[in-house]
Length: 512
Image (cartoon, rainbow, N blue to C red; front, side):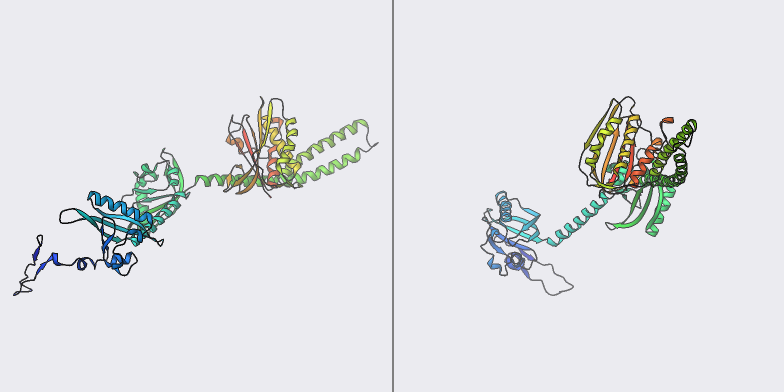
């Protein structure tokens, strides 16, 4: 053959001192002998895409045990039409340009519905005149590797999704350099950094301890594998400090040790603890007030009884009768005051009924409008229709009249009072002053004005008995009574306000 090559192996005088190796003509080796034993699929196609030759591995991949049965067939006989068309386009480009394709990874869709993945190399074949008459393809099945990578990728995505959605701050730290390797959105929000910024920092930049203290705790964590829960101060980007609880564990990531630090923001907990203390204080004062009110009410009953006896016709002269009536009137006023104390202490007798608040509140609008002075407009609306609630309609009327009266006094130059009803579904606890509203479904009554508003110090005390912002004009029991009635009805109340921005009261009554 013109291009025949002859190779003579080098002699090895140690192993074969007396004999030369045989001469081998490479071109005389049959193609079957060279390619048949390969585990990869090897095939030759003509310019029409018809198989001219395949090895056994290729036939098995195509689902045929006799490789001769593949000869003369096309990809359309084994793959889906779309897959076969894709192969045809790729191979037409190779045949047209003469440019091979090496190690291209492809997803294969088969006629029976299953999917596989292959690493494919295809190159043009030329005849003795250099004309392309077909192509040689070599395909290696990489389905197991690709599926393992997909499982790993899905696992990583699930992990990242959990880490990014979790409300606790999480960061990964390289123990050797103390450089921050990764941080979740909760930590970025807590410290005020963007992701690209925090990755340029070390833990020395964000923990408000000395380097020696940080290094000592970090080295101890490397020895024991964990860092116990401790309260520390972290630095915000703006330079302020944030009290947190943090704990850490040494984990293995990408075959190397890394420190996983979990950070709990204590600010929300502090707020909730303060709200709880305020609620407990109000509860204590309420029990004391109701106890005193009961005893005082007994004394008033005796006084009123004697007054009633003395005021019977003919018992007293004109001047004495006038004095006794004054005593009786004063006892009646004191009794009304006692009822307010009992309401604050949640000890009064309620007559709860199942109410549709839209109808109940709409019927109260005329009464509330009459008590408002000129220049104050009442705007009532039901944004949505909540379910029925269990409440005493007369006591609910007292609650709204008290809130309207406070709003009226907060708008000496006129303004607007909004009363809004809506259904409110709380998926988490809501901290307002003074109550912490538990998660659940509620009917919310919002009473809002655009009056003078209150500062935070005033808001902390407005539901306490005998606290008043009206001087001599108020007895300081109106909002205390409101709070007591709402809580005795199983609901919650809270207020939001700022000086000059009006006040908004939220009443939450649980749906039945």
